[in-house]
Length: 115
Image (cartoon, rainbow, N blue to C red; front, side, top):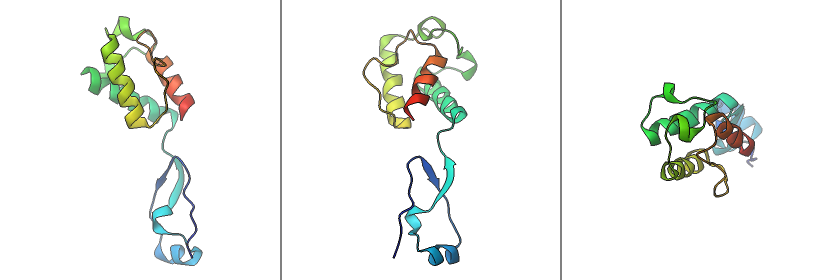
């Protein structure tokens, strides 16, 4: 008999076979108590997304400056960023929830509130 100990947002690890057999946990449900999306993890992932979509250096991202003013983001690029964030971070966002007039810090706060 197997028990399902899977929890949303946790990452898998391997446990010793004797422990697995002893408690009857299915291997595909073995998880550790560490969340995947910590605040710094989200910020790093967002910086990576901005770098990839906009082909910029991380140092060019000014956390408190508006995206359209500091990075010259247009509406099309913001849509690309929006789609990649939804896909890579698995967050549910409403249309126009992320705007080019937001700052990077505002984007981070919005995404943190969704995970």
